[in-house]
Image (cartoon, rainbow over all chains, first blue to last red; front, side, top):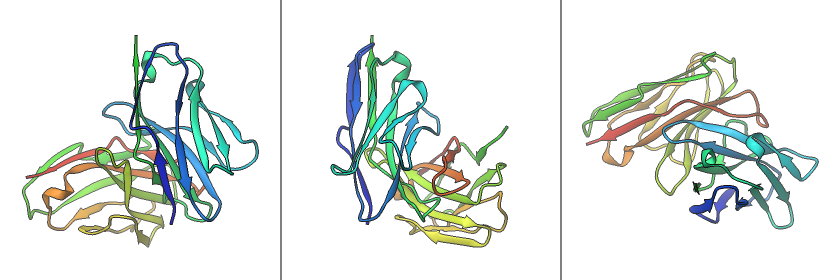
Length: 114
Length: 112
């Protein structure tokens, strides 16, 4: 069975500092990897995804993530955060042949302070 | 440009009552799913559908029923509500396995 672990439940950071949100997954078969963001009282929005090819993936709002197959990780990074990045971030996987079936991590609450 | 629409946004039920959470999408997506979000547990898959007439169970299906008679609609039925079903429910749709899932705004359900 597949599983996703987000290693930090809360990450406080000051504005303009860099941030990394960590995600590890477990799967015996190939997966597609996603990061979603949830702003307060809203649904989820896609930040970026890894399907194949280059292991460094760029997304919206200046975020990027690196797929590391040997470490089964897909960490999310941003070199300089803004107050508006305060939100909850979810890492998710799906199997290549199981559309509509996302498996989510527990979520990381990013809090950006002035 | 509606995307995924969920109704209602808020609901309070008494234990034992039944209700249906509505989900509709206007993007002609084949895949639709229901998730529940609980603090510290992320989103967990309840049921999903890969097309009209085809549904399957996810991780936490007990106490919930679904059907998919059209491509657009994927209602979630609570047969006999329990306090353990207090949660925020999200419906999502996508065009394929590797494509972005679009989420509704959520339904906040409280069972007393």
